Amino acid sequence: MMTPELTVLTFAALLQFVQFALYAVPANIQLGTGYTMSARDREPSKQLSDKAARLGRAMSNHFEGMILFTIAVGVIQMSGQNSGLTAACAWIYLFARIAYIPAYALGWNPWRSVIWFAGFLATLVMLLAALL
Image (cartoon, rainbow, N blue to C red; front, side, top):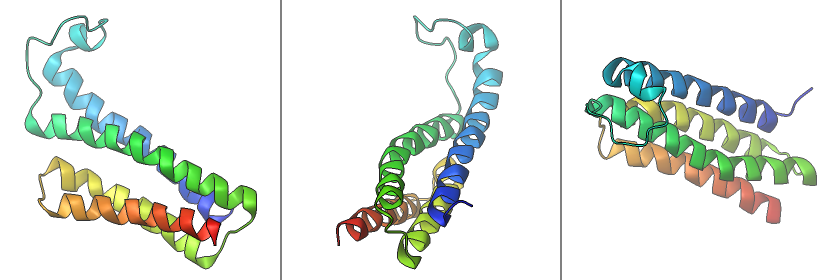
């Protein structure tokens, strides 16, 4: 049976697939498959809508956040320091990443940054909990 931290890590990885689809569908529609399936040696002749471009940036941001979160989960797991705190932080990270998608896509300022920071802080607390 998986720990809560590993369960959340799995959900976070699945969320990345969802984010890819949320970005790829409008990108293929707006840019055309001729461009999206090419080597992309040149800039596209059309621009993405603001919303589609934001979805792409949100997806990239999740890849970046997943690096630290995966390290945090790995350290907690390998050191056997799973706790209620680390489980809560993992769930906060996931809920923040889910909320970040519409916050970024719809331009919710400054809430997008606040939501991002909640996930970042939850990851930091997990890492610090492993050291204490």
